[in-house]
Image 1 (cartoon, rainbow, N blue to C red):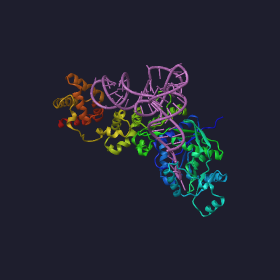
Image 2: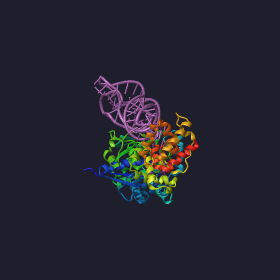
Image 3: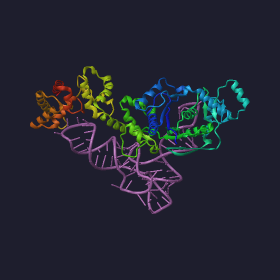
Image 4: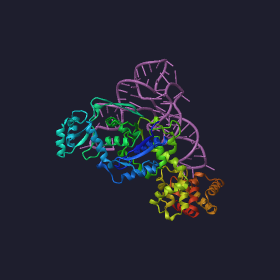
Length: 476
RNA sequence: GGUCCCAUCGUCUAAUGGUUAGGACAUCAGGUUUUCAUCCUGAAAAUAGGGGUUCGAUUCCCCUUGGGACUACCA
């Protein structure tokens, strides 16, 4: 019956892995997993000029963080396979399907310039195609640098079926005689991708929409080698707010950064899955396992999707709220440690603080700003903030004074009891909530927005709470 | 310039010939015995335009418009 499905993700170690690469990897992973197939990793490092040291390790780290495990423990690395590409390229030359080209980059640049001036499509004029065998031998003997180009047939229809975009047709006359082997002996993407996908027995090539126009080149290569073609699945681009392809220019889009900002991998994956695909139901929250079950290539969109960080924030918030407090605390700690001296506080205190913020957090890094009031010695705020908008200073000062007396009498210092006692006190003394609770909360937090005064007092304990209210009274 | 791709609320999307065009995020309003958040309720918000085909088009076809990708010895 059908062959086992094999997909791959093939990042190039040129720096960061961005959010679009991650989604491509995700879709490849989901598709392979749901059929019991294999998801493989390959490093495409054939551009020596753009190689960034350590980038490969970063790619591994991000994929692991995201929970996308690949099957081949040691991924294929293209730069280690140069002889293989060379061998296949020479095979094509031998079969008259490719040829040596001695044109210099300068010459090609000039050619392109002239063509553009005349508003002609920039294309190689194929002059080296006509070289005689003796000419070629001479040039090779003189050690002239050369590339190997594919002999693209004239006026032939190149056709392939894309599982997302449907039947795609190109006329081969529009395709340039593609360079297969560069003058440094490295293969170009086009050659390497076809050879590797063939050798790795990739059944489904799933990649970004940008590759759609170069797919006919690959089809031509498959035909030249007489190899069976994989299925092609091109994914719509992820767009920035300017509707252009998401890139470094549109802002920080590296997966690494999202990790640092405190987006949970499960949330990011969940959001990314929904960008360009939908389950056809109204379900929006998916675990990786659920995604594997529901994923369906037929439901991949054709149009590009704008990346909306607000929606990501929302989904991330949902995932954060589902976390156990202990877990959330361990995730938040690194962010807090960077800014506050946590040694002064015990674990229980920190956990209580984190618990209070759980429903307020969009991303983990928010914890720092949100919890300032629990970790600083002195609150810094203006006295006016204590005055509730519908009230005046005299009443506030008075209320704060009597509520302070009341609080001093409370010994059973916990949230529920404090709430009960204070609210009862307000009713008994005919006070208004706003004129007591607002200033009390500000006195404790120094902030316009914060958890409720009872929650804060519960965490702060009696001594610190009283101290802060006294401090507020001095301000008034 | 050439080639190719795409087009439903601001955003992500559902509905493929018959729906009051649905949901989610964001926005706004109200409620949840103080703020923010959470939670609940509600509101506003879309089929780019023009032709066909059809009893009937968001849905099928064509044109226009708009947007995008590609056009390297980069991937």
